[in-house]
Length: 387
Image 1 (cartoon, helix red, strand yellow):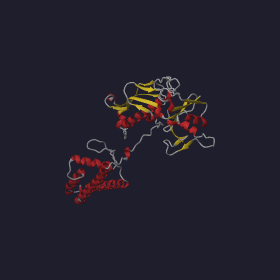
Image 2 (image 1 turned 120 degrees about the horizontal axis):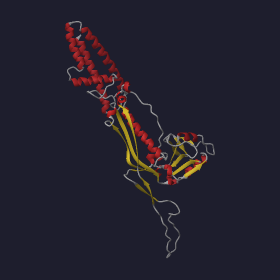
Image 3 (image 1 turned 180 degrees about the vertical axis):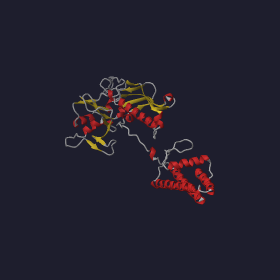
Image 4 (image 1 turned 30 degrees about the vertical axis):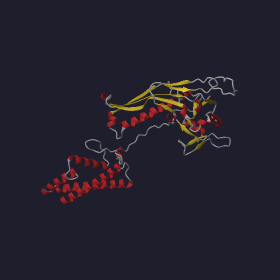
């Protein structure tokens, strides 16, 4: 029986070595396992399980005699070391790998493997996901004119009105030209600090099969981005005006095809190339029913557009921070969003505080951002307001 035990042990060692080679190759090449590799690993798992069952039966039979007990001790030592005459640390790593390919959850301690290595199979026991609430966010921050400076920022502004217009007129020789004044003003951007703090129970962290801290960090960054967008759109209710101080406003009793066409015309042609529409999801749904004079829908499907829709040839973005159509609501923005200037004194950052709340058996997650935003070029932005 000893020969069979030894042969089976060697066979099991070869299988484990092969499985380890497959995973290491995928890791080195920074890729996922191919279907064939995944199938081979599954077969190795089943074969290893069958061999271990065989070795267990062999051990029981060998214990029936003194001679067999001696051989069983050797076989048991072989099984415990798995690879024969190897060190305890190597045996521990091999057993950890064996457990890993069989779907046993391990932790990155005492030489065990980390379950989420690139290219590795994630055991079903930790293949969890969190169903989270998703919000629509428009790319207003990405399209704005961004400044990353400390302190206050003055942006020179040349008003385009009759009081500052430089007069150009026909002239005759030896006659003096009448002078005109072009006055610059400035738009000042300062910085307003915003932050958020949440605490996570250590018991929760230790008793769930997913990275709850990583999830909360990601979620806080996402919520800060929504907070920034709300203020850039002018609906934050604080000191940041954003697009709320845009002056190129069209007021209507109800949204019609004509009012949208007229609103689009309020933005100069030179700024039309990068113009977009921004509205709430409910407003977009309402616009899907609008038709032009020849009965064609204004809102069209366009697979090349970011949200799959275009209105009068321009992309339509939706944001849950935009108000729905209601009395006195600024329901739609249109134009080149580089007409909005944003200044960040402190870029958004999220940190994990592991020591501060140790006496509460909690881990803290804190996020900070310092910014300001104002409309700097009203020629680029048009606003549709409900009367």
